[in-house]
Image (cartoon, rainbow, N blue to C red; front, side, top):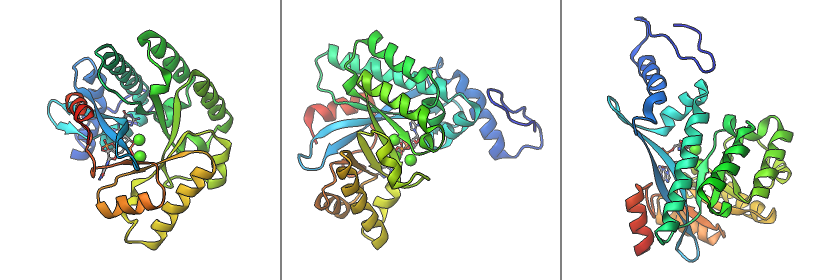
Length: 277
Ligand code: C2E
Ligand code: CA
Ligand code: CA
Ligand code: CA
């Protein structure tokens, strides 16, 4: 197999095993997935812990591949990040969500702010600002109804670039949250250098919050730290009543997880917003 470089894809050879053949196919086919209409944005509610109302949602991408069926973003996003195609995907998702927000507004439907995942590679590019600026203007939407979710990986390098990008985006009026907190390399003290609106505690901590003492200590400490720095806290991957209780008792602001809802297609999400939880 050939060396894989940016914006190129591997040439298939007989020696490739099944796994790398699948990867090769996914990398090749995602370039057509947009025009073939194979991508779809799902929405997972974020729920106010006290009021138990839906106060936001995360946009999560789904890919229905002709041959492989449903491919999870956990599999194809890393491939897109490796090949550089993630910028195209991120742009498509961002515009798709803007269009959806516009549609909800136009049809007088109840809607909530939407969070969009932005890969580090995309976030570190200048055109992210251009994308946000032009899309918000083009679709005529309130920037405050958009939140960008970035991971710690975006923070490791180029912290000056990141800080500038963040402050420009915040001037435009979008919100920014730090996703998967606790899984990367950034330190707690680094948090104060960036003005995040929201901190999302990674699901790995939530999973063991009742089982492992360390994870419950980390979770409650992160909540008070975030509050101390003026940030909102979202707990992700909440599945059990006992986890929910722990998070409520420790003053977590928002809950995202199967306990309330899985990611939903637009129609089902609209129905849920109308009828409530
Ligand atoms: P993430 O940003 O951490 O998103 C949360 C993931 O946790 C989603 O997986 C969601 O379906 C899942 N989840 C939510 N609640 C629960 C729960 O209670 N239990 C369990 N077991 N899982 C829960 P999903 O949709 O498969 O996405 C996986 C990852 O793929 C995302 O993790 C994100 O990193 C990436 N991703 C998804 N859509 C996009 C996108 O549009 N752009 C980019 N750059 N990345 C995306
Ligand atoms: Ca996320
Ligand atoms: Ca996350
Ligand atoms: Ca994650």
